[in-house]
Length: 579
Image (cartoon, rainbow, N blue to C red; front, side, top):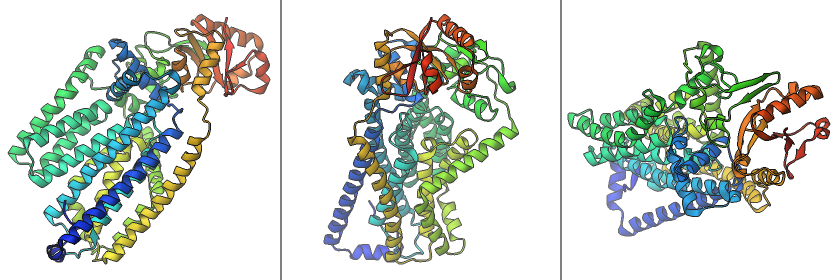
């Protein structure tokens, strides 16, 4: 590991004069810093995960349902063109090993993602160490003074990682995005190593393998894999040997990605590596009402091949109990219900998406304001256009994540999607601007970094204290309580139920081992609650005709409580028996 990040001849001479005691002291300081960073990550990450242990997103429920399909060897149900498989495989292995009760199932998922957070910290350390070695190897700041020690650089790196992971990405999520960040950092670290060492076939094979895993974790990384492989070729100067090595990496990628893409293509009867991108573009750019739910070909987006079945017009009532599995079939496989969708370019829709994406990126900056201020400070210290020169030298570090952010910007920007790309852009920006700054003193650089990290530390302390209070308090497992109350009403595993006004957060249905087969969607509240008794009775009969035994909803209006709605435990959920 190099002693300095940004060093010139003066810095190298100082290093040569350093005594063995100085080296041992620096090594000990770095070890203490690393231990402190890991302790913060362990504490803050665990508290955040534990405080949210009973929360579950619709995505998380779908991944658990797919994992259960794998465990019972129901391969047809497990094969899904919308949800990528890697997270379900990890969940299936975890469920098989620990065999948790229904009460602790969501907690186990959160702990699995907490492990992903620790793994992402380890892969980030690999990436950051390669960045330091790369800068020392090329001597990108030989004209500058020794302004930033390795110890300060690691402080900055750990601060950026913790800020991005805890506040942009979050360990409270029940999706695979933390595992995606592990693989992104590994892939970029391998590219930097190829850049520094001149590359080798084993390194390209490893890169292809990591990119294959990234595709299995999130479909978006199928096209991004080619961006990363091309970046690795450019890192070697586009030499013929690099192209041959990249082909080896491509073969490694195909070895992992090919079987899954082939299985999806056979199941769909057409070439595909996943349908989530097509569905997402149609929903966002073509502005399909209610997203992938209840699609009927609106806005000239194609002809549905497997549309949900509409049974009533007012209030709208849909049935979708077959042939898709899962606790909530509409969310379990949107690619089935939206088979036949044909996204098309719609300029007003694209403008609306880009406007929303720009706003979301601005929100990210407000979450990490301290680092934006630090960058502006360094920009004002930069030597003329030297910062542009440094950015150009380090283009292979920031162009891939910039393309990744642009890819999401035309569809949907969320912190969980863009967090690893944002961290890479922060690293590239600080690396370039520290190199371009007009010889700030080492003390000034240290003060700037400590100021930024102090703000991050206050944020972590604040969120950690809130999570600690939540963790030690008696948290209500709402989904489990709803499921137990349904059992008390005589609902048995395997029964079918109905939903009123988008109860897509269907973990309660999974815990009760029931299936939501029909629903009145969100937006139809007024039409239902203001209907006369005869209309409501007719609605209940139609629900009953779908095979549902009970109707479940949330937040029943006070006047309707006398109409046979039964509270489900001490929750906001209610149930109504169906004929």
